[in-house]
Image (tube, rainbow, N blue to C red):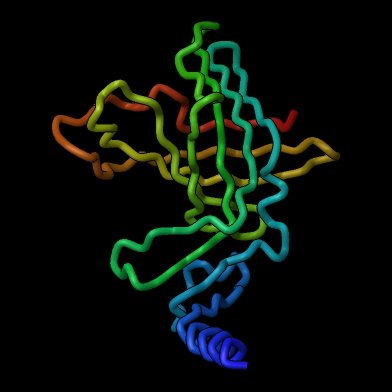
Length: 188
């Protein structure tokens, strides 16, 4: 009986310290929230349309990206370490060729695209290209993806705007991106 009382006391005592995670729709990711522990879940499956292999090929530039959906990814807020945010997002692996010569092949490495926002047929992601510089690349790409489906042909319009981000140390890579900033990709 003593052990049962100890177990119950321990259970109820520790449960008071547990974190309650509130689930909210992914579309509300940028809305301020008073909850300290939130999971922005893709309830409406808006990310599913991006999942798959997409190709752009204009004869000079060949770009192929495969998007996957990652669920329950833990974000690390910079401003407040006491807040825990989880969200669903897409991640991508890609290959880029210029005039038939492979420039990048990040199909074996982990290339992550975190969500900047997801709204119906638009999604905004971060994009980066590999560099040999141990300090990383200074430029970060903010890509606006627009999904369309015309007569069963699925397309993604890719519009990238580059901006100066941060690098881990100095001197960082200052070379511009090699991939096209604007493309229309077709789902394979």
